[in-house]
Image 1 (cartoon, rainbow, N blue to C red):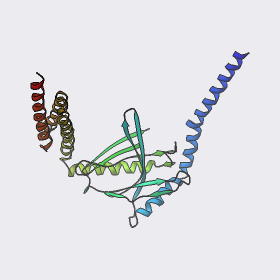
Image 2: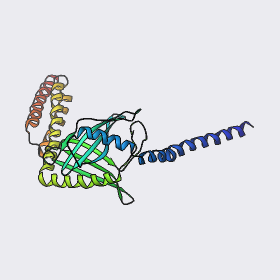
Image 3: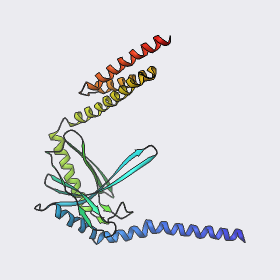
Length: 276
C-alpha cells in the first residue's frame, strides 16, 4: 500500500511540475504576447523618448537592451541595460531607460548622439526567424576603436523576469533599424579605412602594458628571491616584445621591461655569486 501511495505521489508531483512548465512556457508567453499587442509598453517608451528629443521630428524609435557578462573566477556577474534607440537620416540617439517594475512607468535619461562624425567603427549582426529579422546586434565604437555602445534590438520582447520587464512587439522597427544601422556601418567604414589597424595597435599595446607590469613585479621580487623575480621579468619582457612586434607604437613598455630584466639579472648574479 505504501509503495502504491509513493507511486501516486510521484505521478502527482510530475503532473504538477509539468503543469508549471506548460504555464511558464506557453500560457505566460501567450499572455505576454497579447499584452504586447496592445502596445502599452511601446507607448510608454515612446512618451519617454519624446521628452528627450524635443524638437526632433519624424524619427523612428526602437526599444533596445544589452547584457554585459563579467567573470570573477567561477562567478559570472550579469548587468542588464535597457535603451531607447531613435534614428533618423544618418543620426542615432541612444538613451538609457529606467522602468519601474511595479508601475511599469518608463523614464529616459539624456541621449548620446551618434553620427559618422564621432563614430570610427560599427559592426552589425542579424538573426532571422522564418525569413524575417528577429534580432539586430550593433556594436558602436569611437575613432580610437573604444566601445561607445552595444545593443540588441529584438522584434519581440516579452516579460520573462524582472530583468526583462516589457512586452513590446516591434517587427517593423527591427527591420527599419537593421537597414539604418547597416547603412551607417558602411558609411563609417568608408570614412575610417584605417580603424582596424588602430584597434589592433590598441590590443597590442595591451600586451606591452601587461608585460611592463609583470616586469616591475619581477624587479621587486628579485630583491627578495632573485630567481623568481627573473622569471617574472622574462615573461614580462616576452610579452612586451610580442606587443611591439605586432605593431604597438609606444616603446615605453619595452624599455621598462628591459630595464627590469637587467635589474633582475644583476640581483641573480649577486645572489648566485654569494650563494656559491
